[in-house]
Amino acid sequence: MPLAVLHPKSVSDISSIIKYIFDLGLSSELTVAARGHGHSLEAKHRHTKGLAPKSWTDYLHLTVGGTLSNAGISGQAFQHGPQINNVYQLEVVTGRGEVATCSEEQNTDLFHAVLGGLGQFGIITQARIALEPAPKMVKWIRALYSDFSIFTKDQELLISSKNAFDYVEGFVIINRTGLLNNWRSSFNPKDPVQANQFTSDGKILFCLEVAKYYNPEESEYIDQEIDALLSALNYIRSTLFQSEVSYVDFLDRVHVSEIKLRERVYGRWKNSTSLITPQEDIFYLVAFLSSAVPSSTGKDGLEHILTQNKKILHFCGRPHLGIKQYLPHYSTPEEWKAHFGTQWEVFYRRKLAYDPLAILTPGQRIFRREKSLWATVIKKLKIT
Ligand SMILES: Cc1cc2nc3c(=O)[nH]c(=O)nc-3n(C[C@H](O)[C@H](O)[C@H](O)COP(=O)(O)OP(=O)(O)OC[C@H]3O[C@@H](n4cnc5c(N)ncnc54)[C@H](O)[C@@H]3O)c2cc1C
Image (cartoon, rainbow, N blue to C red; front, side, top):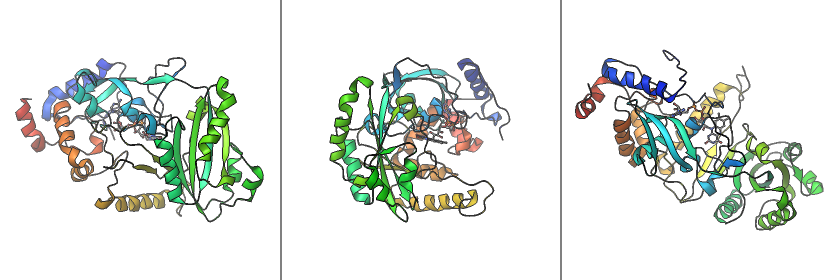
């Protein structure tokens, strides 16, 4: 439990508190962790009419500071990169209590450290991000595959093609009864008769989810464009479903109970930020989004799901798999070192530069605020 919860009204409130703790030096054990609102929408957005961010998350009720401290990933990341690669400038309060403006041109190292930096180097108080004209409408499409390699081949085709879809994601569906029937509440089958005959029971299926943005004046030829794109794909023809929704409704869709499989394209994931990704050109983000039934002690209970998560994470820990956790969670500095791999030195150096007393975000357990550990640092940096 925190000792106190502060509600700063300004950047200088944040700066003053960190400066105060910093000046106490190691005689104090006080630390500070920024809180986005534990997944709630609390960020100060400056809305510019007709413009929208280029890169989103699937779920909107998150904060700008919280997502920029991780990465901010959604089905647009194959085109624009994650949110952290669409930032022009940040205002940050460092672990020394200093307010700094940083960008690719100014305080570059701090800029890269904070992006994906898990709150370790500073508190983000303002962000200037890349915007684009917001489309009005979205064609939202789903289709099924039974063969994983055909599914991924199509996904990789789509993320490598120019002017294809604006959003590409996917998810795995395991043994779902009446799946296509359930979709009918929000999607229309292209071929209702054939869709009726398709059974999903007992099958492992892979759902491709794509979207094309458009404005009403383009509605005449958007369907032709989509038909041409879809004709190059090898999904099960009877399982094509489409929907037309407003851009805002599309962004606000939440599929919390579904398993998502996302893919990215190479080259758009800068490796100078603090985010760690697998060392491969093409990698997938696999998210296990399960929901627990309150007070159940069975397979749908929280305890069982958490045990399964641990097993999955244990399996993912095998070094030859090269898997990296997104929103990483570890309990020891050694595990964190392994997570960062060759990037650990850079992460550590940045910590010494921007938060030398390890005041920020102790809950991650990356750095311990121990006198012995930091004594050498203090001496070197001549901090009392
Ligand atoms: C339902 C759901 C859907 C999600 N969907 C997506 C998705 O589609 N794509 C995706 O990328 N992620 C997704 N996430 C994960 C999300 O990005 C993380 O949970 C992230 O931590 C944002 O949450 P938050 O804004 O509440 O921040 P918090 O959880 O409060 O904070 C996250 C971390 O950032 C630090 N932090 C918070 N604010 C600041 C700040 N201003 N400056 C510096 N550090 C700060 C905190 O100390 C903490 O370490 C989802 C999460 C949920 C619960």
